[in-house]
Each structure stands twice: as C-alpha cells, then as structure tokens.
Image (cartoon, rainbow, N blue to C red; front, side, top):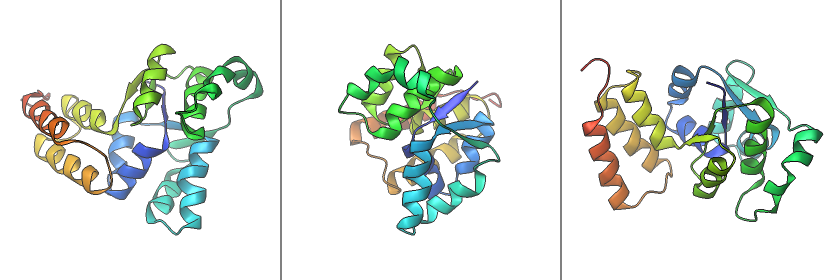
Length: 176
C-alpha cells in the first residue's frame, strides 16, 4: 500500500527507537520535501537526535518527493486551510500526486482532510493496533510502544489512553 507520512509519526517513532516498526509494517514510505525539512533539516539545526535517525533511512526505505506544480495547482485549495501546517498540506497533496492509499498523520484536521480527499489515514496509535493485527508486534510490545510514544510527546487524554489499552487487549493477532 502506497503510504505518505507527515512529520509527527516519523519523529515519535524515531524518538522511541522504533522507526523499524514503520519499515516492517509499510516497507516504503514517501514524504514530501516540507516534511523532510521539518524532521531532518530543522531537527539537525537544533541538534535533535531523531533527525539524524530519520536521515539515515532516507533513500533506503523513506523516499523524499516534491509536490509538482500541476498537483500544487490542482489541490491548491488545501493551502486555504489555516489549521494545517506546511508539512501536512504537502503530505495531502503528495498522496494525490502519487496515488497513495494511506496518510500517516497524528493531526486530527489532517486526517479529516484526508477523508474528504478519499485517502485513508492512520495515526501513530493506529500503527500499533494494525501492527498487532498483522503479527508484526506482540500485545506486550504494543503496551510498551504506547507508553513510549506518550513519553516521547504524543498527546493523549486519559480516556483515550484507557480506550487504547482496551483495544490492544481485545485485538487479535495471527498468532492467537
């Protein structure tokens, strides 16, 4: 499944040392230039360790692609949404440009916009659930990854945290 990612999932999974989970589950991910700039260029300027981690896998299993002028013009209306940052806007446009079926994003507005554009979306927590379902990780791993994501800065209220714990517990994996 062709997948485009916004910045946050890359940053969070790099921070917790589990960027490999994205590779195992998605095989290849495409990011727009703006996301590369947010994650790697600006991250390195501030000497943020996860920027170097992401940079190492670019051109291996993460591909950087610019939004072409035709796509920019055709989907320029996305730019009119002040609630989206540049990386989110470019990620949405890039999905349309390359025919990606999935957008990795944690921002609620980016995910709502992807739905309007008929693009499925998945957040960092959704990756954990899908990874269990496909046998990529165990439930024990999932609980740890969720806690690590929270420690790394994923914003989540207590009600959703408890709901995620229930979902993990009730999710069946191929090895069950």
